[in-house]
Length: 254
Ligand code: NDP
Ligand code: 8X3
Image (cartoon, rainbow, N blue to C red; front, side, top):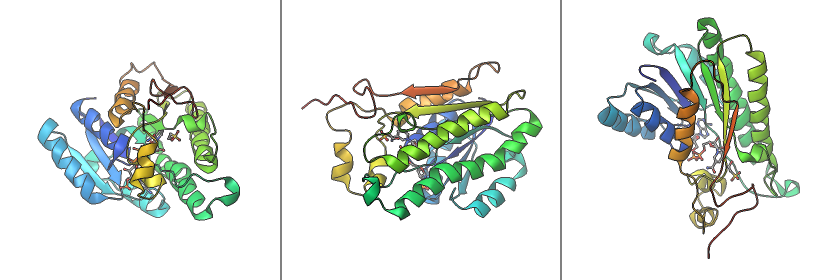
């Protein structure tokens, strides 16, 4: 990955932050994007200190189409040739029956997980096609493979990520650009804090009694995808904790 430019959305926390760390360790130049600029600046300082990484931080809300287009189409000259795009920014809100769901929550999930991913990809991909070089790696979820009770709209957004990954792969055939989706089960990050709007006790119960995946576990797989030889495309990788067998079947110790 030496000196290759890697753009990571949602780099301020969890899986995105872990991706920043493993790609910095592998010698990549990083564009880190998220809304919480202060966190990105702290992370960038750590990566510069630990790995001498070159880092560009972007305060970016992927839901804001105009901001995405302006920011990513006007990158400083040395940062324009993005080699790997990691579409990681995403969130869940709530866990309710659809008939009781909050339309505002649905819109936030659809705007971030589906439309945000599309805005970023639509802005970055033409450059990859022009340069005939690039790799789009989406962070999907087992929720895109198995809909679980009360997961309705979140699961639908991740099913959309899966369909869009397939669609991209079809549309890019004949180019050297690679397309992958990495689809985890339970990973302990800020994901459940966000889903339950800061209710830490409820968030903790999601991972209680099992050994969940870590952001680092996912980042290692993303790096593996990105470092295969150019003729190898890893289309879809599903990974879950050993204690998890499906979206709903989880072994918990007392
Ligand atoms: P975190 O909550 O820890 O991280 C989410 C990241 O997404 C943050 O950096 C956040 O940054 C960013 N983000 C959210 N909304 C926006 C936005 N509008 N614009 C830009 N960035 C945004 O959760 P995870 O690390 O777990 O989640 C990362 C991805 O992994 C998501 O797509 C999630 O769906 C997926 N995933 C998570 C699993 C899990 O169990 N944790 C399992 C399977 C998939 P900021 O708030 O600063 O903008
Ligand atoms: C996150 C994993 O099972 O909590 O996508 O939806 S799950």
